Length: 77
Ligand code: SF4
Ligand code: SF4
Image (cartoon, rainbow, N blue to C red; front, side, top):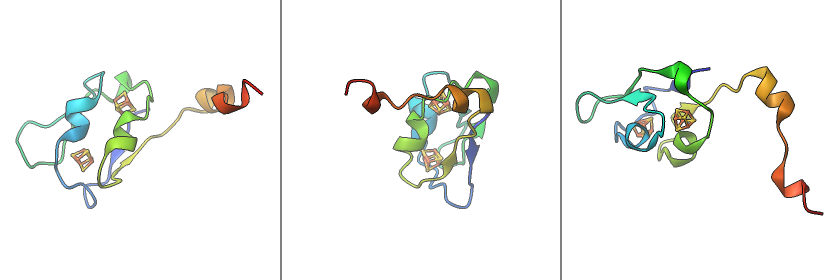
């Protein structure tokens, strides 16, 4: 599911567009809120959400991904 940018929080830095490995965001002009251009390409890696300095990005994780989630810190006990 496509990520969502809260335009009210976004500082328009463009970092999300620069770092997304799938090119989901597009910032056509500097200092504008990036558009979610290819939302269906998002593989929910979380990089944009973690790196956004304004906390403006929300990821919507599909239910089947949530059900398959494994906490890696619990695997080597
Ligand atoms: S990284 Fe965050 S603050 Fe920067 S353009 Fe993207 S959504 Fe806006
Ligand atoms: S979660 Fe990853 S793939 Fe999806 S938009 Fe953010 S950086 Fe791109």
